[in-house]
Length: 68
Image 1 (tube, rainbow, N blue to C red):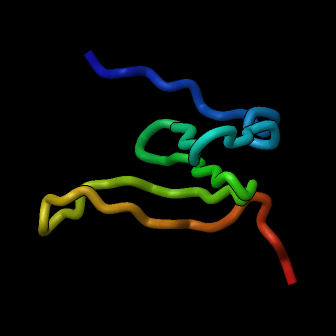
Image 2 (tube, one colour):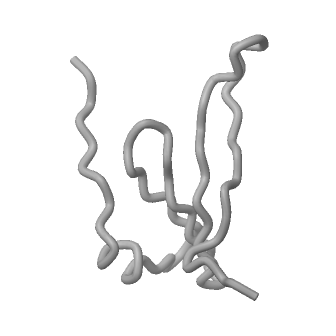
């Protein structure tokens, strides 16, 4: 049976803080929010590479997204 994961809400993402070590909050389907001790929040995607069959992590960007 597959594990069911509840999607993260905007409130949960804003309130996420790393206390003693870096924190990973899973949103489901390989998407996760990585929170560093410094407070930086980064969206990452974990997937299996189609040709090598190895687990790969792709960094998508920071939260909240900064526009210049």
